[in-house]
Image (cartoon, rainbow, N blue to C red; front, side):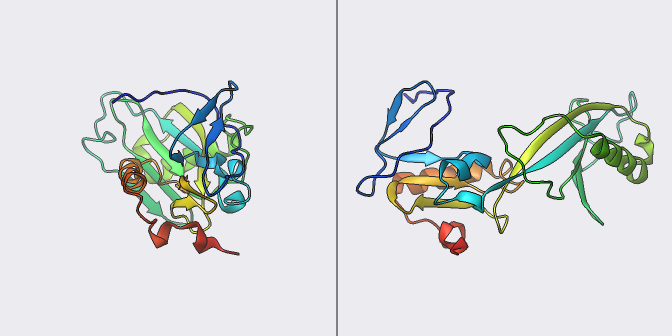
Length: 216
C-alpha cells in the first residue's frame, strides 16, 4: 500500500505546537513528519509521555514456561485439550502444546514493577520451581516434565487493567494506545481496526478508554 517500515526507537516527543505534533526524532537522528501519529509503545508509553501517561502505565515482570510432553502422548496437545485458567489461590493459566512446542504454564499474578529496557530476562529459580510444582499437582501426567523454554516478559499495566485509546490532550493529531495489561496481544487485531477507524475518520475516543478516567 505504499507504506514504509523502519525498525528504530523514537525519542521523547517535543511539546506540541498549536495543538499539533509536527514531527518526531528517531534513534538514527532522522526526523519523521506526518499529519497524524499513533504511539502504541507498550510499557514505554509512560517514559515517552511522562506528563500525560506517566505512571498510569507500569511494566510488571511476568514469567512464562513451556514443558515437554511425553513422547507420542496426545492428551496435552491443542487437538485434545482447551486453553485453561485456574482461578485458585493464584491465577494460573496455560495453553496446550501446539506443533509439539511445549505445554505453556504461567502465573497471571502481577509481578514486581520493572524497567522494561533494563530488566533481566533470565527466569528465576523460584518461579521455575513454582511452575513445576503446579504442573505436578494439576497435571499429574506431566510430573517431572522437562522445561523446554522459558520467557521473561512484561505486562503494560494500566490502573484499571483496561485499554488506553485516546488523543494526546495537547495534540489533536496524536493518539496514544496501550494499557494492554496482559490481554493486549489477543485483542490486537480488534484494537488495530478500532484505532485505524478513529484516526481516519477523526472520530472521538470512546469514554471507557479515555485518559481522563484516571484524572487525579
